[in-house]
Amino acid sequence: MTGTEKVILRGAAATLLMTLYLRSQDARSSRPILDDPYAVEVYDRIEHDVHGLWQFTGDRALVACRAAILDDWIRDFLAAEPDGQVLHLGCGLDSRPLRVGVPTSCRWLDVDLPEVMAIRRRLYEFPEQVVQVSGSVPDDGWWTAVDPARPTLTVAEGLFMYLPPQDVHTVVDRIVGGTPRAVLAFDAVADWIVTASGWTPVFRALGTGFRSGWEPAQFAHRHPTLRELDDISVYDEAAIRESRLWLRPLLSAVGHLPALQDAMRLHRFVTG
Ligand SMILES: C[S@@+](CC[C@H](N)C(=O)[O-])C[C@H]1O[C@@H](n2cnc3c(N)ncnc32)[C@H](O)[C@@H]1O
Image (cartoon, rainbow, N blue to C red; front, side, top):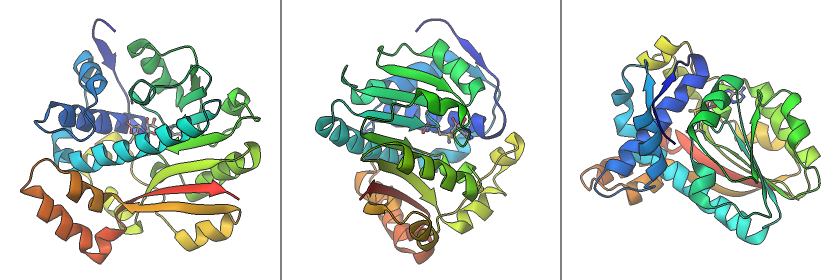
């Protein structure tokens, strides 16, 4: 990983800069939650023209916690299924395969839009078992890279809210129907966050915003073969893990407001 890289992205693809920036801020802080050294290295290597990322600084602990919990779930899966498969959807410029350590016996697919994967391939070197796949997740094309015989964990972090609900269901249907012993781990936001995202200046400048809020009853009805293992408020977790002590009571109080309990939650489902 050497030299700088110009990154020109718009729309949902550009939002990877927000999460990368926040993970780099976490790693630079005195008591990091995720402590991802690659986020610092990669963020420092790129030149981009998206202004105002500092406006998301208050979300640093949320983004770091979300990633840390998902990393733990992935490590659990890899320990139980070393020959399994991980589908890392909407991977952006996340270093996740390097953070969690992917066994050579595992198959791991990083999937994102072609313009993102072109940058990702230039910025990272991954081990052979970590395959880089370009495609839009609701489309069929990238699915040919999936091994239909392996138990499969799908991780979608900061992705489903950018897709229309029908596309989310299409992706879930495909995973449930196309892989044995499927586990799905993803985050989702409340409907009012979808509305509020439309007022966010950075989103407006990038021409993007959220399109799906979490509808638990509808999801359960639409995917009856899935059983929920976990449903975690990321605010609650951040209130425990936040390194800035003065922010903990604030996050805790905020997390107990009924509207914010559902603001950002992590879900883990399994088939059967
Ligand atoms: C907020 S970023 C999250 C990136 C990464 N998961 C992380 O946590 O840093 C959203 C990501 O979803 C990707 N994305 C949005 N729509 C997509 C689609 N239809 N197919 C594949 N990736 C998509 C974007 O390109 C971007 O990388």
